[in-house]
Amino acid sequence: MKIAVLSGKGGTGKTLVSVNLASVTKESIYIDCDIEEPNGHLFFKPKNYVLESISVKIPIVDERLCSGCRICVDFCKFNALAFIINKLIVFDDVCHSCGGCIVFCPEKALSEKDKLIGIAQCGVSENVTVVTGTLNVGESSGVPIIKKLLKDFPLGKEFIFIDCPPGSACIVMESIKDADYCIIVAEPTLFGVHNLNMVYELVKLFNKPNGVVLNKCLEGENPSEKFCLEKDIRILGRIPFDQELGKLNSNALIAVRENQTYRDLFSSLLQTVTKEVQHETVTNP
Amino acid sequence: MKIAIPVDDKSMETSVCQSFGRTPYYLIYDTESQVSIFLDNSAVASQGGAGIKAAQTIVDNQVHALITPRCGENAAKVLMAADIMLYKTINTSIKDNIAALNNGKLSLLEDIHPGFHGHGG
Ligand code: SF4
Ligand code: SF4
Image 1: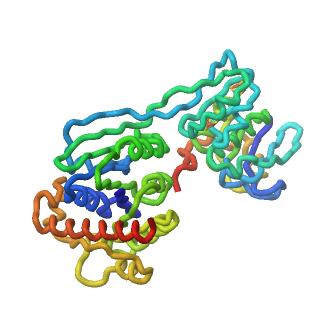
Image 2: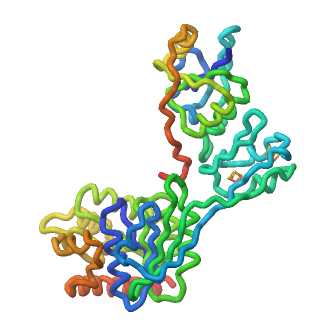
Image 3: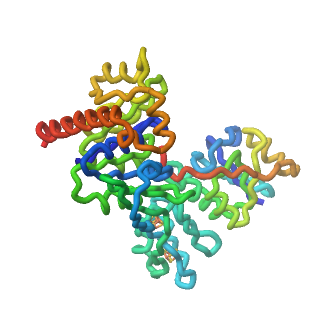
């Protein structure tokens, strides 16, 4: 089963939840789709890395062949091309690699070239296969990397955890597209509710079965919990706000590998989630 | 000299539009003949790269200078490749800006902002 872990902003505990859930299984794959700031690997410290570079195709013009007809400029829906003083300019960062301009150029003046946009890495940390994608600084779209991570690596394991990018942009949609279940991690603040709502709307849009993990729980009022009760959202579990967990986390240690209390906490969370997913497949096969 | 200004409406009395790429119209004004024409901005509804397309329109109209409150990176690249001067507006009045240009009182636009490229949101 593919389980996506989401949150409205970074630092909510998305990585904490996905890393620990992955670690508490017998065997699993953890995929870090937070490609602008992947940090799951800091916890897993995976061994036996394999590296792969990821590139997209962008057009390149042969000026000797170009007649200046501008068919390509008019064709490009993304306005990635401009024709200025007898010269075609390609805006790499705006191009979506659709390839259309190359097909429609009557002079065959355009061809494709590879542009490196990031890397994918895969390694092993005890029971977890760790897959990480990193987008090069300055690149605007990481969607091709997410596609690659989700398509090429996850094979054959019972549990796949997808650590999604924060927010609700198209890169997040790409990350949850094929997920069987979505876990939203929420903080107990008013701002946390705002973020929770944003992600919840997205997950609903994709019609994904979902539940919320309440992180950093303290005594007293929890606005995110209240929100869940009002909207009838399933609460999967609560992670307390305690010093020990904070310390393990800031030392980049995986709590369930260090401490039995947390192992029990995340084991029962995993059980709850598994039941939810199985329930979903029975009722909506 | 021909100049371009992004404007909110097809009139000399309207104000300067705050966005170069997404403005509804451009005023093309000839400082010698004092003839003004208004162009529709076909880039206004584009998914992304509006600045690039808008800049292409400006270049195609043989404009020498653009007066605008702001301009994105990619659009600036197109305009500079065509040797178009970029000036910063002093206020939202079209006439004030034209007068300031004629008197050599406009300064060059320096803060070019990075684009959003329609990926985020
Ligand atoms: S379609 Fe081909 S020939 Fe026409 S402007 Fe584009 S590159 Fe040049
Ligand atoms: S490949 Fe597609 S998006 Fe890129 S420049 Fe050509 S037409 Fe535009």
